[in-house]
Picture 1 (cartoon, rainbow, N blue to C red):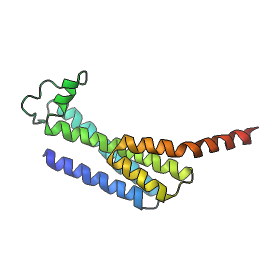
Picture 2: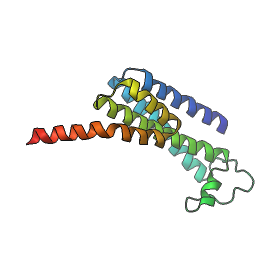
Picture 3: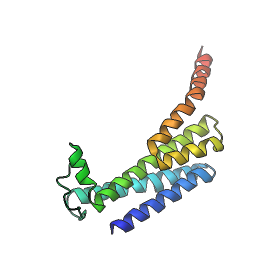
Length: 156
């Protein structure tokens, strides 16, 4: 069961990322990525987390997993020492990375960055979420400051 859910979540996220990077960013496409992509991944994460934490579904803990909790490194390790814990944790990453990618794309479009500049940043965000987000924050800084100066100049 966990292998299937893991695979389905991966494929779904990949389809959403492909749409984000390759398709025109019409409002319908952005809404589909937001609700059908981020929203469904978040729903799957939330439902599976509750079922896993309450013991409704078996996480298939690996021998030696110990007690699972969020207060200690050993407790967090215990969460990920099951197929269920890994799957739920992975869906968590998929949802948040896709959300970050969507924000990056919208922000980049708004600031006038070309899709050729956006694509590598979005790919890095897909592969290593926070690293892609950090790269985007560094790239956008100059243009964001120019926009702020322009806005302040209009208000005077």
